[in-house]
Image 1 (tube, helix red, strand yellow):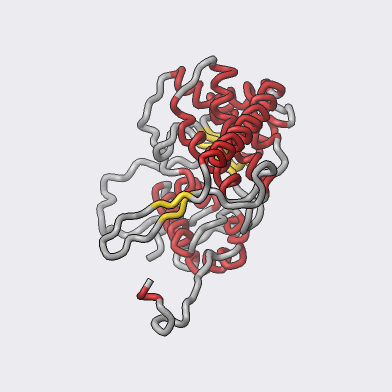
Image 2: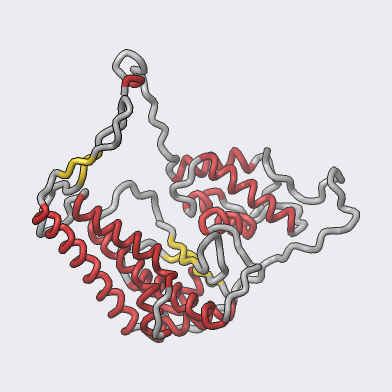
Length: 321
């Protein structure tokens, strides 16, 4: 663009997202503004917040302080930070939503399907938490967190990610004998990954390391966006066939894993129906064939006193400014 022509802005500074050390230091800065409990470890929080920018980390501290204030705590502890992280990464809980029992059971099987496939494959991110409490626009969430910062993806990891995305729908088919619309976003993400693998990242053995796609012209002086296709119809048919092959292959893999580990799916579904949310330790218990340990007791926010009017002396930590 003319604005960035040589001589206009010769020095351009790229500000990347902070790595684990950067996140830890940013958290320490924001934590100075709120009273922190001794069990809070900034390094653990930094490891569990990959992809967070500085503003996200500031928001994390603020949300944790709000959770502590609602529970009338003097200090912000690790439980508050975990709840704040879940809210930011998975969306706010919508406990007012009352699902019919059949739909609730279907959601439990769906999320169990994602989690079991993810735990059985070796290159997927570890399962951090599984919940059937509606959050944001989702009826349930299976949250995976990487163990380290990652700046690129390899082919095997992408293929296994596609298999995990199909785990939810397949679990519905196997255990509920039905299909629902809840897997639409999973399908969209899986198809997009497979298409990018073939058309952009050169990860197809059949089509080789080439870029197959459409080039879009820029809007300039009133012109409309123009699209130029640089491949033939015959080649596009091969591209579609390769995308279909990848999707079918990973769909079959996920189905085989769930059929061979149906006992794990049933156990995880039962735990979700009982407790609504299970963490990594409970998931590990189930995958090891052990009864899942009961969830850790959570502190519930007390009812607000009548004389606690706005502007009164604070009795709990205030969010950082």
